[in-house]
Structure formats: C-alpha cells, structure tokens
Image 1 (cartoon, rainbow, N blue to C red):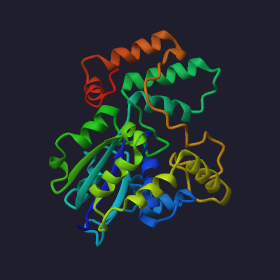
Image 2: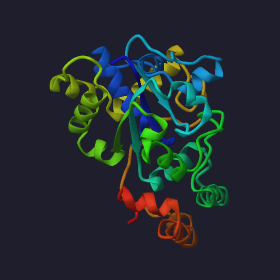
Image 3: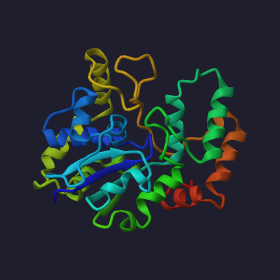
Image 4: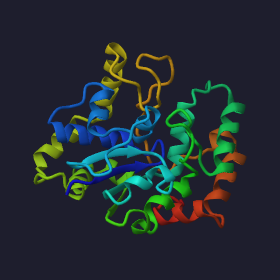
Length: 277
C-alpha cells in the first residue's frame, strides 16, 4: 500500500527519538547525523519552507513527520493518499519542562522562567516558532484533538495508532514492534532488528549524533538551529513522570493544577491519557 504514513506529534513529545529508531530499523544502521534521520522521515514543515510537497500519489510508502495540526489546509491535497497516522502523545507537563530547557533561560533568571511557564499555561501550549513557521501547530489540546478525534473525517483511507511517549520509554522494543507492524512498510517485522534499532537510538547515541552533526555539518538540529550553533543541546534527559513546577514558586504549580483539573480540553485530554495526576 503506497501511501503516506504520518509521524505526528506536538513539539517536544519524543518525535525525533522515534524517528531515530525508525531510521535505524529501516536502513539497518544507526543514524550518524541529523540528515540520516531526515532522509528516512522528511519533515513536512521543512519541505514547505523550500516550496516542496510530498507526492499526492506516492509510488512507495512515504514516511512524513509533522508538528502541524491535522486540520491545516496545506494537508488537504494529501488527505486521500494518507494510509497511516501515528500520533505520539506525551505528558504536557514534560513538554513544558523540555520547552523551558530549550528556551535557554539562565538558571538564575526565575522571572523569565516564570513568564515562560505562565504563557504556556495561559495559551495551553506554545507555537514553537523555531521548529516550524509557528503557524498551524495550535495549543496542545488542539493538536491532540486534530489528529486523534474522528480521524476518518480528515483522512478517509487511514488507520490511526496513538502511542504514549511514556509507554515507548518504558518498553521501547514492544512499542517499536507495534509501530513497525502498524506502519506496514512491506517486510515482516524482525524482533532482532527492532532491538538493534532501539540500541542504536539511546540517549547516549543521540547525543553522539548531535555532536557529530555539529562537527561535520550534518544538517540542522530538529529546532532548526544550524549544526554547531551555540544554542542549547536538543537531546535532553528524556525524563517522564510527575515533576512539580514548585521550583518556580508554589503559585506556578497551583496555576498548572487549575489548568489540569479545570473544565477545558486540556484537562480532558490530560485525563484521557493519564496525565492528570
């Protein structure tokens, strides 16, 4: 089935890690620089910036990564040719903390950090202009809803698989096996190859990939930063689990709790995916 397979998520949800594993599985080699990842799973937003689009009728299965909402008009031409939608969802609290790290605010500048978090809470997410033009990502609940609610309305020929980042971290071999079987790229899924792909995409291996990209100029980082730039490192600790925002002040944690347990789409999806603790 030669159709488009989307690897979609909100920014900082683990999309790049998953794509590293996909690249390692598909090519049989650990990616050495960012361009090795992009070659297997091109980024739609990057293609659009260069005035390009994937084929509307692909001759072979095409993997595409995006952070855009599923309802943006630019996807209209690709809706009927979409065969699979894999949506990766992550605890929005961890998305917030990872985004705060990428904002490169000095550790002693609590006011800027508090302002960053207050804005995230107020807008229920961010636009992450550094990762895409900043148009069409939407808030966290808008993004989740667009890909996971009534997907057949937007992609009439597609199957949907929603995977929690936390489950992928807890058992990457089992979850990557499920993902490869879902994507149905034409070959039987080999457990040994899955294990090798997971081993090739550890945080340590991804940090080495980032360093090598900086050394040889192997493509921009997933933030859009040129290899070798002075910004924060893209590969973090991959943490997950309950982490309080009280280090920024109890009022910040209280504000987040109000969002998390209020009458909103944010609270709805947080509860649905087990993030309301």
